[in-house]
Length: 369
Image 1: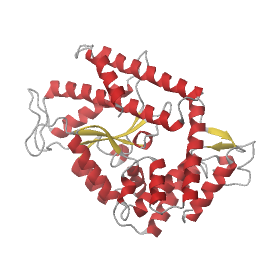
Image 2: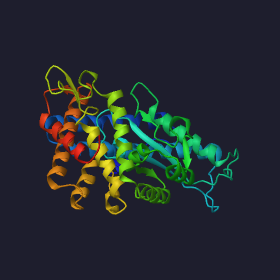
Image 3: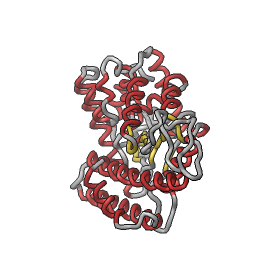
Image 4: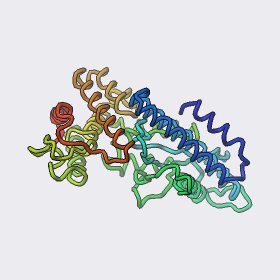
């Protein structure tokens, strides 16, 4: 999180009475709007490059999430009291918001939603210490619901963010908030390979430092476990094939047909063959395949720095790592321009020929299909 953004937001909110939630939420929305417009103007003028734009938009989201969690925590504690940890101490807050996807990978774009997972370390056998006590699981579920409500409520000044919680354990059918132990057990014993791919991009955005450190240990243990590479390649390839079939451009068989490079057909920057998701899947495959021997690959969650790590470790040739980085940045720059114009991330098929062919070549070279 950028300290300057966080400090500016705190300074705005401290002037508003704690019990005036409506004004606090308006302040949060105006803060987001002002900074979003500022960064968009800088991007359009060329004074702020893509990577800095994504950094700024991600830091903005983190600063807002930090304050939203504080508001939700105060509200929940005022109603029910404070939950306890298993060692008998009070939670403060004993809860983290984990970012996946673009916010986890420090790659937010204009209008991106937030892929979030909530984790707590409260004592599931204990109740809160308030006049209207409830058990810890219920407390943290209500805390999570409050966070989502504050982020997604639509008013005349808009909403803060759309939120997607489907990456939590067991997806939409799972608990809204997981205990740390339940999260660890799920990742170790039940999660699919695609869920471990998603975990490559996961990091704590705000909340308890100690719970965050425990989450990082769980993440490192899960991602760094020994894997059969043939099975891993097959599972990554299978998931990618499903995505292409369901989300890619049908006219071009998701960018793989003979007509895929013609101007008369579209190229989906994200979903078609040779595009953004192919690069992301290669990075995730590499992290799962080689982080046991090269744990430094798990130090970062963004694709660019993981690619740099693969290059430094000698796991990916310099030329190919550079090709993937430059293609990824080129695609994302184009997607950002489309988003600023409220358009889908699609360009004509005669664009990015060289990049697409190289990405597809490296994909096949890795043994992925």
